[in-house]
Amino acid sequence: MKTLWCLIVLLFIPLQSFAATPDDLYNKRMELYKKAEAISLIPWYYFAAVDQYERNIRQARRDLPKLTGVIGIYIPPERWAGPLNQNKEDRNPFTISQFGGIGIDGNGDGIADRTNDEDVLFAFARFLRSYGTDHTHIKMALWDYYERSKTVDIILGKVKLYKHFGTLQLDQYAFPIPRRFEYSYRSTWGDARGWGGRRIHEGTDIFAHYGTPVRSTCYGIVELKGWNKYGGWRIGIRDINNTYHYLAHLNGFANGIEEGSIVEPGMLIGSVGSSGYGPPGTSGKFPPHLHYGMYKDNGYTEWSFDPYPHLKQWERQEHMKKR
Image 1: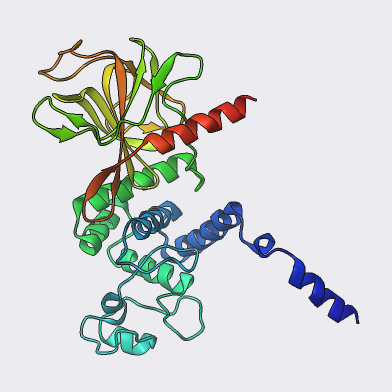
Image 2 (image 1 turned 90 degrees about the horizontal axis):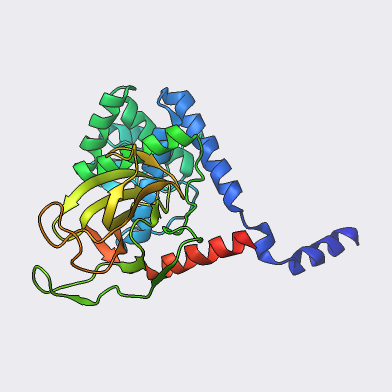
């Protein structure tokens, strides 16, 4: 009778109560990264960076299968089973090795399953280790695997972030203008622009007074800093989710902000200005404001998307924190 009662209770408990929390996912991933580190002697943050890059790629593309486990790395069938293997879904570790595939049995069940988290992660670990365990050789391995310099740069940027902060939880955000300063904005993404030829506006304009502080909205790496004839003094930051944050028309940069710098949410990076639309130093051709753009990389190319919903969300979150 007790068993029957327990079953009835379980049936009426909401399913979401059994769902893994974000902390559970982070902990499980870190556990797997540490296992891969112990086996390969390659630091865990390399696996975390590759995994995070591939997880974001899956979210940005429709030609890749949806994620089923906690590890996001996708190894195509021909690479897993071997380029000459007629059985692209081969799960036999021996025949896979005979055809030069990278698939292995990582969890000891006798099967090389490319949908199994441990098999996939340890297969990738063995691939990296075949080149060496130092940074230079790992970089070579990543280039041979992806054959795209931008992908390698993005992954190594994530490596730098994970190594510096020592945690996987780097997806918090902040509004670019501190709450105590006056500002206004509306959705302007896609509006027509005429200077330099007809084009669409790839961002949201946040109007504020000259010198208003501008903050990093994310944990990220400064990929770009300097002058652009359209954006004036501008800065580009790549976050942990493969998103590129572009902040333009600045009046100047904060001390210590350089290409390659690590930034975090709320960190001062510059101030509002009206620079741009001309050669270096041009300013005052429009009211002072911050141009905020966001771009997504999908492993092949990069495109602009509307930052306005994200800005509103970050703004609301900051208002909630202050209550």
